[in-house]
Every structure is written in C-alpha cells, then in structure tokens.
Length: 143
Image (cartoon, rainbow, N blue to C red):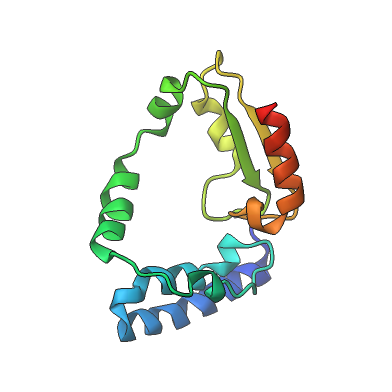
C-alpha cells in the first residue's frame, strides 16, 4: 500500500526472475528469493545484493522451518513483554518486508518505553544503507 508504483512493478518483475532461478537451483531458493525481493528490501529498489551472498552455504531445511514455522508462530507482543533491558528499535522508512513502525507501537508495553530510530534513506538494512547514521544511533543508545 505504501510502496510507489514503480517499486511494485520492479518487485513483480524481479520475483518472476527469482521464481525461474529457484526452479533451476532449489538449494539456493532462499538466496534467489532475497535477491528477487530487492524492491521490498532496499532503499534503492534496483540494488543488486548478490555480492552479499558470495560464499554463503545454506541449510535449506533450517531456513524452511524458520520462515515456515518459527516466524509464523512467533508471538512478537509476548516477546516484547519479556524484555527487561532498554530497547532500541531501528527501522528503515522504505522497509517493505515488515510492517510499518506505527503497527509495532501497540505491541510495545507502556512501561518499556523503547527508543525508536527511523532511517529515511533505508529499507530493511539501515546498518548497510546508512552505516554512519546507524552507528551513531546505536552508540548513543549504548552510552
């Protein structure tokens, strides 16, 4: 809903290519899926993250269980209630892989009062897309 039409078109095209690659190399289907989701994952919807996967060896049964069961059944609100340490939540403004920041707020217990950092020129990985700003936020939080 929040993504620009060009980003949506790019996503559809990239996922078609990823589906073909997954058929050809099922043992790398997680990598192909991640690369196909660039328009949802990166501030630059055309970013080629393939170099980040160089040399990666995947245990697909583990990934299948993690994404097919663990994350599906994960109780985010319950996990947030259990955190006793100070909490920093960092998100990219253009992250279309997870729900927007506003949807997470009702899950955070009132007494937790987390620190929030929203990175305007990032998507799912502000630590890579805005590393200087990310480092500054993290170091300030840790102080």
